[in-house]
Length: 210
Image (cartoon, rainbow, N blue to C red):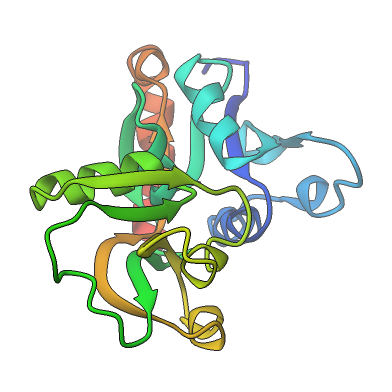
């Protein structure tokens, strides 16, 4: 048994809560994580685990660079950032989707001009429209993407949609689904080789619990 705990990076917020719930379902004592205060690295002693709390993009960076063995992150971040790691399990929580939305009643696919798309996810958007063989101009927005069509900055947006309420309230509608999203378990390529038995045992437990 490797004495060093397996380090798992969790995306702060809802995915963190759902993952902790899953670990508790496996019988691990996650008291330290639940009572974390301001701490960002927390032990799960009976599972020989160490939890690191991070932003989604950083979860991928930490796993890719091997400072964390495993990570839990949304498929949205994986699709946008790509990277070298193994995606092992669809955890089934954090479900939503990428969708293309436009101003209600506008005919997005008519005409021959280049369409302008506003999004927080330029890579996801670019590959979606490239597969369609469409020329688009992609504008990266950091905040409320819904504003872009209202201000006539863009013909449409590609964004994460859960209920669609925000879109409706802003006079937008989904015209096409781009990709389904849920939380995924990712593993560092070297960790999987070096600690294969431990990681596989944990992954098997997780798959059984799901």
